[in-house]
Every structure is written in C-alpha cells, then in structure tokens.
Image 1 (cartoon, rainbow, N blue to C red):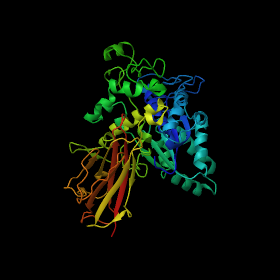
Image 2: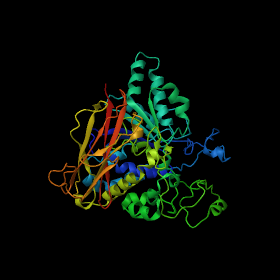
Image 3: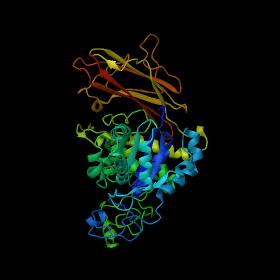
Image 4: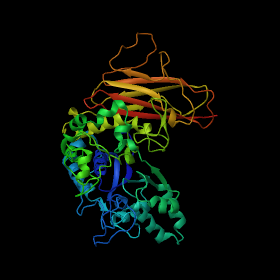
Length: 507
C-alpha cells in the first residue's frame, strides 16, 4: 500500500493441505512481492523419493508410525498444487489488477515454479533446479533483502548454500561472499522441519538471520488459541460465505468435510470426511491425530501463513525487526486480556483483522469494478518531524485517515508496550479530552463547538486522529516507545490499515 519497493521472496512448500491454503492467501498479496520462485521442497512429513524405488531408512514421519523402509511418503507422482493455485490465480488476475497495482502476470508465476530438494528429507547431497535458483539469487547483485520463506524443510536452501560453500570456501572470494550472503539473506520458516538448519545452516552460516515463525494460531490448533470474539472466523458459516463460495480460489481452498485429499491413501489426511466419528476413521485405517471431527465446511489450517504475514505492507513494518510484532506475532510474549504473557497472543490479537482482509481480497477476485468492492483506508502520520524524544517532552501523535470508497472510519492510537523497550505504559490523551489510554474517534460524531479544542477534522471520507502524551521522566537513553495508529472502515468486508511510530529516547 505504501512501500516504495517490493520485497524479494522465494516461497517453498511441501504438498500439505495447509500449504495449499497458505499459498492461496499469498497469491492474493502477491502484488506486494517480487516473487522470485515457487519451489516444491521436502520435509520430514512429505518427500517424493528418487523415482527409482530406493528405500529410505532414515527418520521421518513414516518411521514414527512404524512404517517402512519405504520409497516415498505422502507425495504422489504428478502432485501439482502450486500449478493449480497459479491457474486459479490466472482466472482472477484481471479482477485483482483492478483493485491494486502490481499483481504479477500469471505467465510470470508459471515460469517460476521449480522442483527443489524433494527426494528424501534433509538431503542436501546434490543440486536441484530449486536449489540452483536460490544459489543464483543469493549470489546476484540485485539490491535488497532476499527472503527465503519455507513452509517445508530447509534442504533446498541448505543445498544452495552448500553448493556455494563447495565452490568458494577455499577461494580468495570466500570472505566477501560470506559477508554478502549474511547481510542479504533472511530465512523465515515454520520451524526446522527436516533438521537442515540445525545440522548445517546454523553451524556453517550462523550469521544468516533465521526467523522461526512457528505461529500455532494459524495452524491446526487455531480453535484453541484464537480470541473468543474471533472464533466465528473459523466457523462453517463464515468460511462458506467469505472463502469457499467465492470464485476459483474459494473452490480450491480446503475445508473440513469437502471430500478432498491431497494424496491417495494418506492415513493422516482425514479432513475431507464428514458424518464420521474418530472411531470410525480409525476403523477405516486412518490416524485421526487431530482428535475430533469439525463441522463440515469449517476452517482447517493455514499453518505456514505466518512465514510471510509480517512482510505484508499493512503499515505495521513488522519486517524491520522480529521484536516489532505484526500479524504473524513476534519474538516475544504479549500480555493477553487476562494479564498473562503469551506468545500466542502476539499473533492471535491480529487474527480477526487478517481474516477480514482475506475476505475482502477474495471479493476482489470476483469483482470486476473498483467501485463494487472495499479497499483499505489510507493512513498518513503528519507533523511528527523527529523520532527522537526527551524525557518530560510532550509529544503529539497526529494522523490523517482517508477512505478511497467514502466509507465511515474509525481510528485510534495505542501504545504497543511489548514491542517497545521502555518497560512501562504512557498515558495517551486525546487532545482536548479527558485522559484515556485508548483514544477512538468514530464517524459520525459531534463536531466540537466553535472555540473548543479541535480533536478531529472531518470530511465524509477523512478523519484526523490526534493524541498526545508526555515522555516518561524515568525513560533512559536508547529506550523505545512504539505507537500504532489503527484505522478501520465500515465497508461490507471491513478493512484495517496501520501506521507504526517508533520513538527513541535521546539524551
């Protein structure tokens, strides 16, 4: 929405149903990224084998079931879920392009699908088309961070790095190449799904930034972790109306009881069944590890979506540092409504906004006219000339929020205490009003009388949200204060935009 340059990404998945769902959501945001590659990659729960019948004797999910040795695990020949997702994207590309600029042409995405290291879990012994692509991207001179996003294992990344090491380790170029890669590459992954980070990348390339984004809120346990007010976003009714019944992407998206299965005879994939009990699934030969059967049509999982959520251009700037926090959470705990420090709450607090955003974008896919869909409020922070502040100083936070659709707007400033390094809360005041730590202005409302302190200047599609505070006198040099301007519209599919202000205490 406001970022000057697209972020460079490589997206890696194994053929799990939640990976497909994750990819569908990613493609709805693909106008924000320079997607350099979509790569099939293996993990300990999905691997293709070498096609020669070679039996695998190592550890993977199959061995935990007491199965094997085997030549393939949960990976059918001809698996093409990435191609399927891109073909669905191609059907809605024209509509998406009406609502936002920068969506890549489907042909561009088609040419960027590669097979990575898929034969056996954790195998980095030989190159693959996917690892060769990553190697090329790592070594190129294109500016900007290269984000390697994996919802699978890290063997394809590991092989690319291993190939670079083998080629340059004993050369005079090694020191410069190592430094370049350490400064350029960020790995964002849902865990270490094949052990390659632990066994190779972390040991040989410790200076590459590794962001583990194992956010359970977006995974299969979501029902236990989302906030009570957001549980309806997992329901069959909401999912049908806002996802499953909305165009080609909705048709492809996997939900409970839809009769679909990613792989033939997959004993762990029982989600497509409806009208059965856990005991009946066991009798059918399945391993119902989830422990229950949910309502047909309801949400299953997007377990790997967190690997890119903090890269989204929503104004939270969560890609800047892992401590900042955003829709995928952060590398710390936030204080939940009950007062408990929770890693899950650092992501669950945003879940509703992210789901509403998803629903609005899916509507874009079936809406050929701009005027017939909802679009994000536009936020601009004004009047703040410095980001360094002194203890005791009075600071005014002011933002102008406009809505491109002329919708009514709500805006508020709030302190993101956990993201800042100052260990305390400041008292936010709405200019001209009584103290209130959360300041909210909603259209319509009464315009202040002549002569009174002006709080909000209003037009139909514009509000001004202003708050002030005094920098705590006990704040010390170098500490930071984070403030979020959060603005929402009241469109049919409501959307929220943000702006983050980070203030640093000076001497």
